[in-house]
Length: 354
Image 1 (cartoon, one colour):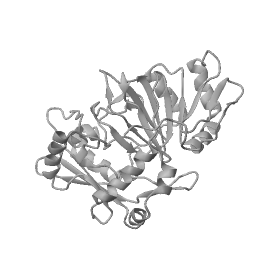
Image 2 (cartoon, rainbow, N blue to C red; image 1 turned 30 degrees about the vertical axis):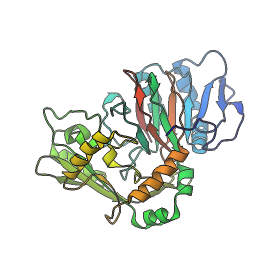
Image 3 (spheres, rainbow, N blue to C red; image 1 turned 30 degrees about the horizontal axis):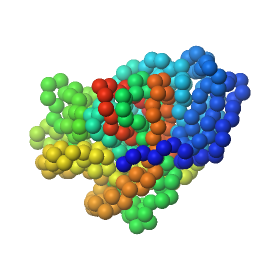
Image 4 (spheres, rainbow, N blue to C red; image 1 turned 135 degrees about the horizontal axis):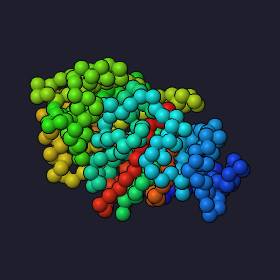
């Protein structure tokens, strides 16, 4: 589906104004995300920008709660090391990404690749680490190089999503919770393989950043997951948790899970039929099939998944990345994903925040 243009969304109030008068930044209240950019021809230099963010952290946090997402356009962030420094000022996530769902590597400090999933894949809307009990409360993105065509980061208002959920699905989610099953392949070579079209093809060594089963089991125990070792050396993890989470500041009850994601599509919003058949054959070989279930183990029906995906399609928003853009999201109030793209290269980096 085509993403809707920006202009309505989280906390839209209309108009524009200058805030925090000591620094010439303009705040365009056109919807979600809220765009913040220099009012004049020159942006602050990087050091001054860091100080500005630190000085106005309370105000920026309030705007993030209101809008769900902020974009610093024409920011002076010019390198991954700069982005790492900014993440430190914003408050890095105390946890880690061990056992995460996306294929990604560390770049510098707490900065990682956003994903290595193939460019043909549209990554569906989701909250970061919504398949785990513990999660970062905020997430930041840095656009180093936008795609030649497509590759937009899509977002959706999870306040609206939570309010507009079909009532029958809401009742089941509230009463049963969510159970998540994920699989990781047996390692080959040094175990650092990068699967670019389905997360289940990554080895557990790459996903957990370790060479030992004992370390995997310790990580799983600390994150509320059950580790199940299979005869072929592959790993299955399973965990069950509530389908809704209260916002730590506002107390709002927000949908936080990926019941709408179709593992048969390679965790993509679209997939060629031939590739789908290959993925389905891989899933059929699994002792415990990757997927999202109700907390009692009962399946989420195709009809229920379709209703959830239709609501996400309705709420999806996107815009065009520019080099140097920084996007900050509240990880409960805004879901994110990625459009497929064309061209040889796209570089968007991510940092998890507290």
